[in-house]
Length: 113
Length: 115
Image (cartoon, rainbow over all chains, first blue to last red; front, side, top):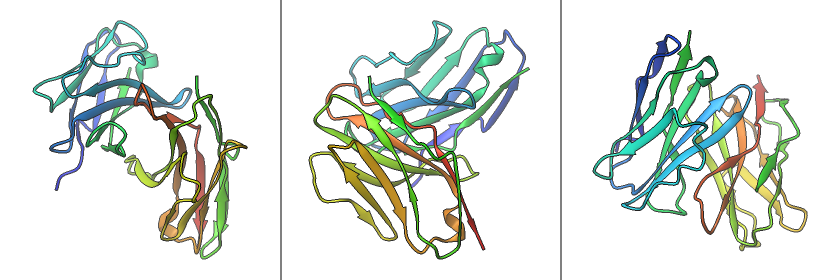
């Protein structure tokens, strides 16, 4: 069975551009999470989706960040007007249900020039 | 808020030796989960072991075991008979049982197994 799939693997863009990062969770997993991993801040929670419930957006660092999950499956993390401090690895994880172990993808390395 | 502290930024041991990675955490929760994740250079976070706080018995997965001291809020990982493939960043993580299902990570320990 396939694991969590993230695309693109690497993304280089200019400051001020918008970017979209995609996550395909493990089939049947109801919970989906986004984390950010950077040298200065370590691993930080961004957002959590559980089934049809309203997402927990408490970790989003600014209103330039948004995410959606369509049909309870694929999720897209969008960063508008990118800044250099947005450079990081963005990790997606999914779990069968809440309280189950989270399985991570390989991440997207985002570099802002 | 919960915090997780890993006091060893880097460790290095010889193959076949036993190594222990330290982790302490701070929380007012009574029920929670603790995890150790491994991140090799491939970037993928791999779950190594999970401990439920309400279970007194320490979790074990093959060569990996934990020493969970709830009163001391300590959660160390012991790797026995270390192998070259154990070389990776190791992250300790905390998750509340109730409420937000987010993992709170420590800063990580870079472990190198030398031949």
